[in-house]
Length: 425
Image (cartoon, rainbow, N blue to C red):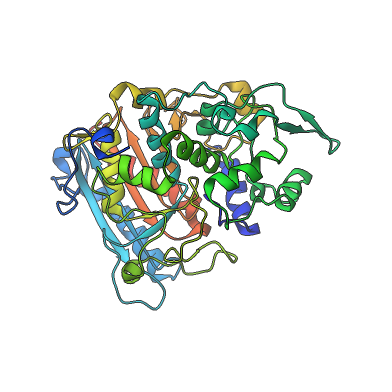
């Protein structure tokens, strides 16, 4: 979701979620760099991939209807298996009043789909021994050595447990997003304490957050939060470079993701996707106007074609077109559930029934309660963008849209459209 999404309408989105239950290139990519000029989209006959093409018509009709009704300006849906694409189609135009059709090169704000990319960047440092998942955050950010925990009477008490790096990646840190429950006393305290600032670098911002009270003891409850923003500062310290440089050197650059960045050059403005509404004010920031704040939790923008490169790397066990970003065992570690029934019950756990959460991804643990197969790992952005990798069915998807209001509707619809069309699991 991200640092710029701080309004009442966003709260309604997350309330709906609760109700659903649902270094350098040579080091990071020793095998080289993927050619950015060669598309990541490799088409194949849907039937050969186990899909009934006729059943994709439900997705096509649904998205066309939403465009015609003016609910969205446009969207892009891509579905594939076995590394190849069975369905890809753009719908509508890039923004209200525009004539340019949505394509796989349209640039979308992906908001919280930034989190998996930043988490993978962190794991490249783990592989090099420069970052320790089980170390206290204070090893890298000393101000996190003396944290306090909010009490029901409005007082605070010193935390009795250290916040670990893996707590940041799994949202079990005790940190919060104030906009989720903005009227609570702790959220008001966070707002007054500077949570919503975007004029600071990641390292400076982490110092502000360290002064704010935790919602719970680290490692005891799941709350969606500023955790990945703080992780961005940890990554900067461990990696010895600014976050945007580390992301580019270790992930997006090696994968040839040339249109994925925290801020886009003005020359690319003609490719930006825009929403029908303003999201309540302040949601859809101008991603061609940089600020000092590089939000690891929600600051990236990308295209369908670019983000597919990242997804195919995940599907490939950490490797894409011969370029290895992570070891297979490192990605497997990211897909281990960091939550327990007690942790999920203690917090506001909205990935849903049958779900867990690893290091940067939600996880499907029980596909009797979810359409994607067990082991599926994924995440989404508050403007409706979404991806998942389903290893059980060897299936992947990327969905791009700019509609905070319909984000949850599209999560439900995508699961129905895709798994209804999958006739040969």
